[in-house]
Length: 67
Image (cartoon, rainbow, N blue to C red; front, side, top):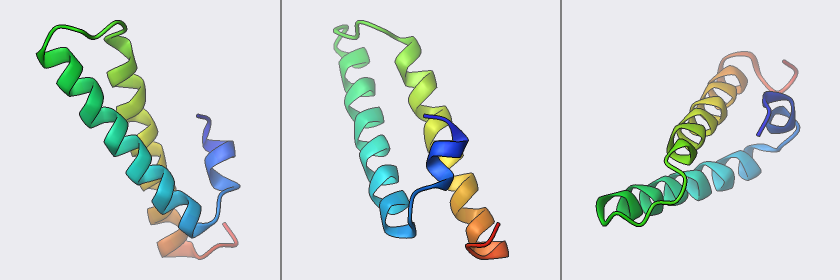
């Protein structure tokens, strides 16, 4: 997911997206632990998406929704 797409989401949508991504990361790590993970690069992508969402949430917190 691109940063521009994330910036278009509302605060509640960002919270929901973050929960969704964390859940997906948990499931991916579980699959990796039992050697059933098909695409190990997906873990890296999900972690980056989580970081993007948190960064944008922090930006909104500091500068308001106008940024």
